[in-house]
Amino acid sequence: MNKIHAAITAVHGYVPDYVLTNKELESIVDTTDEWITSRTGIKERRILKGEGLGTSDMAVHAVNGLLKKRGISAEEIELIIFCTTTPDMPFPASANILADKIGAKNAWGYDLQAACSGFIFGLSTASQFIESGKHKKVLVVGGDKMSSIINYQDRTTCIIFGDGCGAVLLEPNEEGLGVMDSILRTDGSGKQFLHQKAGGSARPATHETIDNNEHVVYQEGQAVFKFAVTNMADVAAEIMERNSLTSEDVTWLVPHQANKRIIDATASRMGVGSEKVMINIQRYGNTTNGTIPLCLWEWENQLKKGDNVILAAFGGGFTWGSVYLKWAY
Image (cartoon, rainbow, N blue to C red):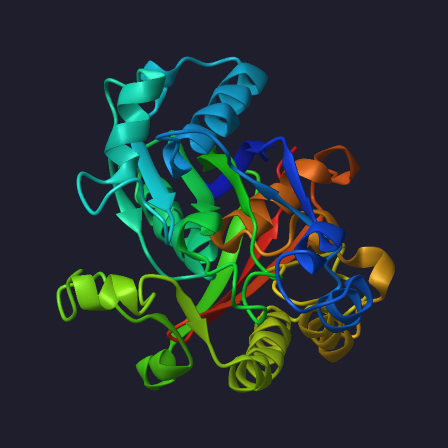
């Protein structure tokens, strides 16, 4: 019997209609289009508008599109892993809320929080359920409504983040296609450089935390940039070396879309040309857990069966990692 791999058999994404341009940000904070573009590569990002709308509402669009594309019903889904830093509420899990909204009556699920690395952590986790034979249809959703935790008076963070969501379906494959390997890392000593100060059990919401605007993303950009450039590039190179892949063997690099300079450094470390790198940061900014599945969704028609694809991400806390997969369709 051939080894079972967890293969992506469908992918879909969703971004909100509202476009927040660099030009509009110029009227909100002291910044310029040229400054933002030269330092991040971002020109615009999408924002989810509407009373009471959360991350799960974007996920509904992404998942329903995926189910339609694959030709299956929500009731066939057995497990949902929802990778998000901005769940609809602290509990219940957004995975449970999503299952109810799409009618996935036979699925169990949970949320996975690893900041911007969440989607690849979730993909690696989900693949274990497929490889073990426990489940045959697993949804991995990556999405965030980052606008809900951004201070639009802080020009160091409000220029970077946007809202969006992507989803993939994992199913068993015995052709040697699917998730082949993953390398995942964490270093909690980095928490001081990128975190949300209040809103957790250590510092619950009070008048003081709200008055001090501590329920938003706090980032020390230079420190994060330095760690991200090194670690995201190194782990992508490490997974290539571990699987005896040369730069010629790699069909696509799918990097987390945090900063164009970090993406370029990762591609350079891997020896991969820009024509092999999936980039949409200029249109969507950093959607945190949404970046990698949104790239796969937008490039789906260029992906071919057997393509060697390297995913790489870096997130707050710190978290980082890489997944090597062979495209299955």
